[in-house]
Length: 341
Figure (cartoon, rainbow, N blue to C red):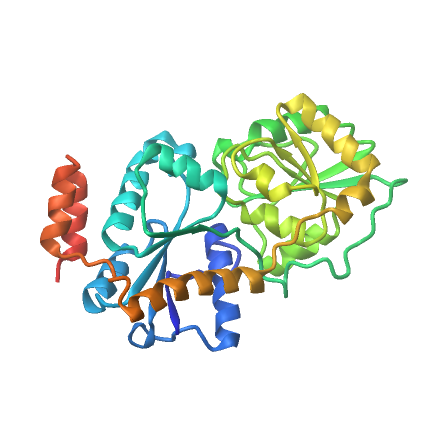
């Protein structure tokens, strides 16, 4: 069985967490010989959230007998209320095309299902993982409790919900005689004490993380943060906001905070018990994750081959009817374009 990933990959530091994760996933399957190089040779298609939908529908129309697995993000309106339409679109595409659904965390699955009636015969939760050739703890600089404690934070997005209120608070309240802090990526606020640098290529980001001691992650809404997993994979204990999927990801490898003032207390607690948290860091191995994706897809594929499951079938008329039933002319227009020849 071979899998084709429907995604427009971006090179370099851009593209966000999904781009980096899917590249790492493709790398494993490439080595294992299960990554399809063309849609024609694929038995299964994996597609991501609301992206590359024109290609998704093109392949669905051309290969209706093949299996389509949908990796779900969000809920998107948790990031921006104005993006409710994306959650609706993701649900519609999932209903029309997907044979199986992968949620990135238990929180994401529950939150999505509270908003929309996602329901498939095949669904699962699989956490993300980073590229181990880049994000690993090899040559990580040791923690020096007598020196300045080095904090790091990162975000591809400048959305305020990524925790910039907390970073701004830390910028004004941390004891910078005891701490130093660097922020990597885009920021809507200017820092006085925190050193800010532009987004880095993955290799450069990993090097920066290995030169740090603690990763501060203040993002308020995450389905399963790749930035958080990358830092953990580089051997950094974490101080993270206590919300959405963050507790699932951090596990015993750090502390959670509920407000800005508490964040400083938790940073100090981790610093005082550094080796304990470092020893209890969770492991996110891309080889294991790739195996879970493959086995999930193969279960659907085998059921279809044995005749116990028939792949989701959809046509132009069904798509327009579905959009009309949902009472949204906007989606009817989108689906009309997607189903067009």
